[in-house]
Length: 237
Ligand code: ZN
Image (cartoon, rainbow, N blue to C red; front, side, top):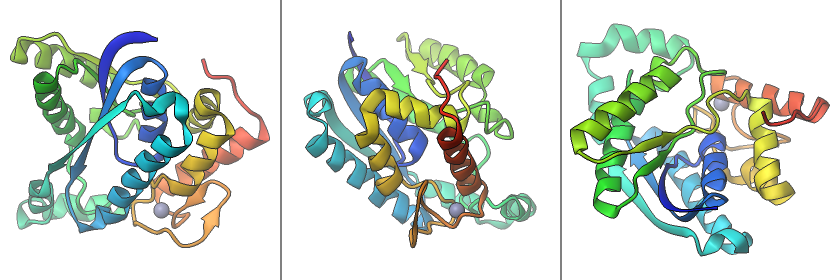
């Protein structure tokens, strides 16, 4: 375990919950940051509180390391995405099953804001669940994008920051296996029951892989990854 402190970009989804567990096994003190950018994400915001409470109550080895949670109001993202200015793009995004609050480059904004909070709190390692393997359609999730931003942020704030993205080269099956290796079956069950990934905010029926509509791109990834992991558990590289 490292002595340092880390700030985890935590949405309450499968990926960021796995990243939070990853950070809690490595850093002496871990804080979390989340972004509130619209009603549609109310379910997600509820999920992150549930997951944080569960980690504090069920994972004694991590309880002492889990520090403050920071929520940032980003309602401006909803205003940008729902205006005529971006209407054509919004229609294309909706056809792809993405929420209308999706804004291109969103993760760049998240990292900038996390760095500002981390700067104030002495948290110079930022951890995010971005993944190039499954989400190559999002250029702001790519390794090159985040490495470039890490350099820009470090220069611009006059403070060396390290961006850690432990899921960058994993597929979803390997992400499930990483969760199991970090927190055992208890963490897998926490992710299945309480984390939220579905773009449409559907909870409803509990599937083997968790709650969700089962048809949006996020649900399909989560489900197919879970099925592949169950069929043939994969080693984490
Ligand atoms: Zn869904």
